Amino acid sequence: MDFIRTCAFSAMHIFPYSKRSGTPAAAMPAQVPNAVKEARAARAAEAASQMERAYLLGCVGETYPVLFEEGGEGVSRGHAPNYTLVTVARENLRNQVLPVSITSIREDGLFGTLPDAPPA
Image (cartoon, rainbow, N blue to C red; front, side, top):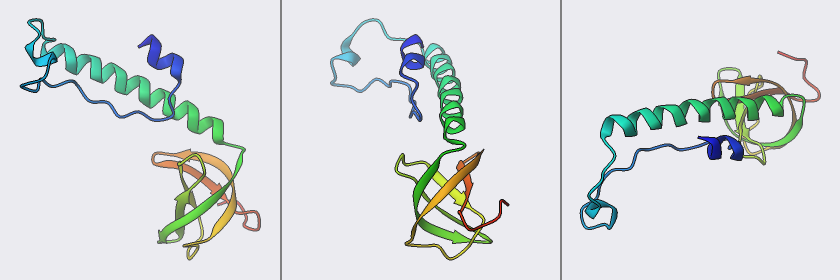
């Protein structure tokens, strides 16, 4: 856990080790019990969630060029150079790269405004 926190990952994919027959690890006599693996994965997932939120909060106030890829229902979504999903309150921006001022975080990434648009 110390190593994970030291790295301060912006995102992590967590999965518990599962024994695969024929691998050297599967032949080891000492195996970690499933309950321990699940508890460790849960602790790692909580740390990952905290680090992701901290990373996203660090993006607030920044301006990124965003490649818009999809939209509808009053918004457009795309990715910044740091691969973070960015949403703005304007439709029909698909296939455009526009500067976005990041104003807040969302459950699925960042929210921002375009320079010529009033804040939503």
